[in-house]
Length: 148
Image (cartoon, rainbow, N blue to C red; front, side, top):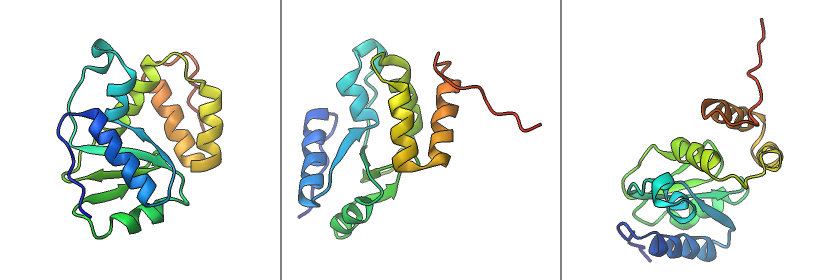
């Protein structure tokens, strides 16, 4: 079964993400530009368009999604922040989308996010999270470590 990505409709893209996870028997959450559309207002989200979808999944589910998508006409890659990117043509906005979500959603529990990232993605990605928090000037950002 080939799934055709809808254009500029986050609801239909969410349905495609749900179908991928259901048919690959995995669990995940939609992230990236589609999450921006769903969670942020027009002003904060800036409603830029996307040609891909990003799904946060555990490392153990990544091979199942790759196997499911292997015979489909999509490019896939593992996201450095944890998850899978599925696209007919790749975009490199994942980190910027994560920063915008961190910067504009006040109810994110940063300490809980740190704990989840450390537990499921490891210390390297946890360091990446801290770097993103510093770059956006988040009040809960930890100071950069100085080895000198």
